[in-house]
Every structure is written in C-alpha cells, then in structure tokens.
Amino acid sequence: MNEEEFSVDEKNRVEKSTLYLVATPIGNLSDISYRAVKVLSEVDFIAAEDTRNTPKLLSKYGIKKPLVSYFEHNKREKGDYIVSRIEAGESCALVTDAGTPAISDPGEDLVVLCREHKIKVVSIPGACAAITALTLSGLPTRRFCFEGFLPNTKSERKQRLKELSSEKRTLVIYEAPHHLISTLNDIYEAFGDRKIALCRELTKINEETDFTTLSAAIASYKEKQPRGEYVLVIDGAAEDKEKEFDMTVREHVDMYISRGMSKMDAIKAAARDRGVPKSEVYAEINK
Ligand code: SAM
Figure 1 (spheres, rainbow, N blue to C red):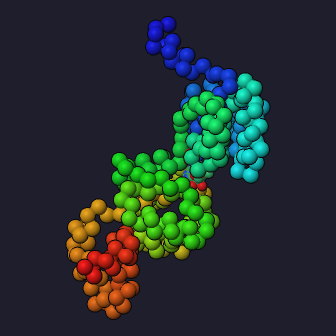
Figure 2 (cartoon, rainbow, N blue to C red):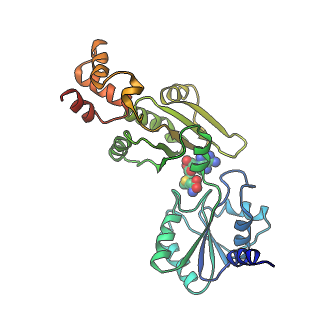
Figure 3 (cartoon, helix red, strand yellow):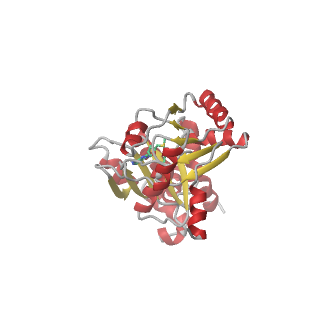
C-alpha cells in the first residue's frame, strides 16, 4: 500500500468517542457516499431524526444498527444521553430527516453540545437541498445567502424580509408546502418582483424546477396546490439600480405619481421595485 492509500484508509477509520454527521439522500436513496455507508455500518449506534424513515435507507445498504431517536422535541434529554454514551467511548452517527445534519435541523444543537463537551465531530459530506437547488437555479452562485426557514411570527418575518430586501447575493430559502403561498406573497411584498427558481421534490420522481418571477409564481399558485418540499432561490437585489431601471430614484417615484399614486405609495412602490427600504428612497428624493 502506498503512502497516499494508507493515509486515506487511516482517515476513513471509524474512531471511538466520536460523533459523525452523516449526510443522507434528500429523496433518491442512491445519493449517498461510500464513506457514509462505511461509517453507518461501523459506528456503535445511530442517532436518527426520523426513526421510521432511516431504517428504509439502512436496509437498502444492508446495515443493522441500534437507533436512538433525536429530534426537535426530545433534543435536550436525548442530546445529553447521546453525549454520555460518546463520552463512555462509543461512536455515534447522526442522520437527520434528509440531507446534511445541522443544516436547518436539530443536528446544529448536538454539534454545539459535543463542542462544549470537547467531543470530536467529523462531518461526512453529501446531499443538501439548498446546494442542489442553488446549482439548478440559473441564478448567480458565486455569492449566495442561505436563510433556511423564515421566522414563523409575522413581525419577525416582516423584519427579516425587510433586512433581506437589500441583500445583493442570491437568496436560498426552505419552505413547506402549506406555507408556500403566504411566503411568496410576503417576499413579493418586501422585495417587489424578482426572478425566482422554485425547486420542489428534488431528486425524487416528481422533481420540478420552475424558473419564473415572484409575481408569476403567485399567479400560478392561484390555479394549483403546492405539493412536496420546496427550496426557493431568489435573485439578489440589483447591483446597479440606476442602470437596471434606466431612471433615477426621483424619476421612478414621479412615474408612479404620474400614474395617480400618492407620494407615499409611489415611494413604497419604487422601493419595492428596487429592493431597497422605503427610507432609502425617501432620503434620496428629499436630498
Ligand atoms: N438538512 C437538510 C438539508 O441538508 O437540506 C434540510 C432539513 S430541513 C428540516 C427540510 C427542508 O429542506 C424542507 O422543508 C425543504 O424546504 C428542504 N428540502 C429537503 N429535501 C428536499 C427536496 N427533496 N426537495 C426540495 N426541498 C427539500
């Protein structure tokens, strides 16, 4: 065995007293790495967010391991229990519902706990819905901003969207089907019209990506029901707004006034189009 092969083998050895974050498929059960299968086969136990789903994946790869349930509503007690077993010398693989543990799921808390207890954490990379959607979106990928799920409460969500309205990087947001329509409306309200890729059921039989605009997406969901899991990839705020709109901020506001809007409504509409806060437009026209 040459030196390189030896060091790869060493690196792949499953160690005691270690937490492994193992990325699992987001739909297509074949999307899993050799290393992930090896780790799942060799650890002492597996902590799983969904103990009904994980056995399907394990049985496809002929893996039989004791499972411990670890999810949002038991993460405190189970986190302490998992840490105590790792501290006693066992190795644990954490798998979440789908994709990469610690990305918008309780894996984040287990990693924090392990860091506090000075437990070694190793990440086995693989599928992640955000990255899969971003690569498909056709929007700029060089710089992007991952937001996960938007806050649930109306005021927090409004505040978050206001902050994000001037974000120039491509935005990636997770959403469940029953909240999709209200989320699209909230984003449109805060950002104005923008390009968006709606990626649903990625890697599954009904996978679909709709490359559209926020207004067209809202219109299309008046005719159909959202189904499955979604990632929304939204164009960032325009870099050069004067160029994009081919008019100054004042001309933009005047255009709306000439169409019969009040000054405040015109400021609001121009701000929404430009993806900037109202206060910025207000300040600009009162210079
Ligand atoms: N840790 C996961 C990852 O790495 O992508 C994300 C977990 S988060 C709790 C679940 C959300 O991810 C879903 O609500 C959906 O927004 C997105 N998601 C997961 N699988 C997906 C898929 N196959 N297609 C589209 N979105 C998906």
